[in-house]
Image: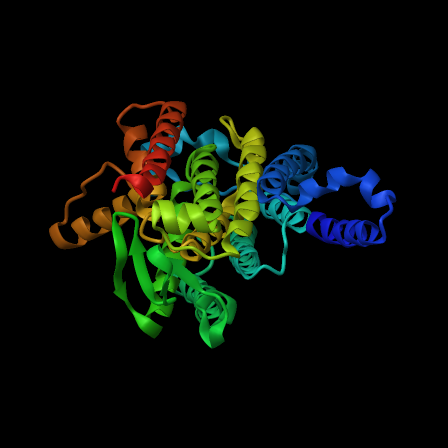
Length: 397
């Protein structure tokens, strides 16, 4: 809405200027602000935060009236953890609808929604959120912690991810096919959509060609599941989402500006990419707003509705910025949570022994005696430090 308003104002302003007169467009010259991505990104973050704060109580009341309480695993399943989390039984879940709604509303108001990067991230987030909603609904209806069958859920995740990956690969404005502007690297060097980059190397690591599609899909599915695994303590996933989204908002903004990307940082540049920072700032603002109600003791949980949506959005955004490998650092807490599960399962199957007292790793620290709030805040600190380090990597060399 704001970009459309600016375009309308600019046309009127130019017409008045050409006619040598001053009218309403000159009187409303402050609307010139709406052209700047920095202004609209800040506005999107603030708007998503305010929407979350205002709509949060109504969403909680509605979820309570629908009796969508979070099922907690039994003592037979998780032993001592059931005692620690027993008080969470019945807390409303599916709160991710608040995050998705706030992000989409703020994006519609502040961003150019037909920008291909904004569109693919928003659609992927929504599709993953709908899948999570189905999963949460099944858990609630059956009063069990198990939702949709794991293989079925993974299949649908890959369908969504492959669709997004194919869009990125075949869209001319992104891939550069047909002479339409694509990505540039240092010294005006065009790079194909199949190139895999990392800031420490000023040339692509490898060009996967069409095989980049399954690679992109793996990034999106992996990130989606990693955020889902992180969402086990009050505010943990939401807080880590904020730091990761803010870091990628900065990366998208820098990659969208020619001088900063090509001449100074030597990172992949695309002229349309800066607009993605508006969407990511909206995600950060919505994360802050949701955290208002999700901080310990939580009044609602995001559920798979939120965690799958957030992971899908962050994974897609990392691909759009051509910094998917950097997600390992910036989203390090998410990666650590996912790796702890992989290592635990692998060790138990191969050796019959567990590495951690329980996985994901945040439960390991709980069982070591850390209070839930200690685990959450310390993981937040780690997430912030990793996000800052990930951004700093851009200019190490």
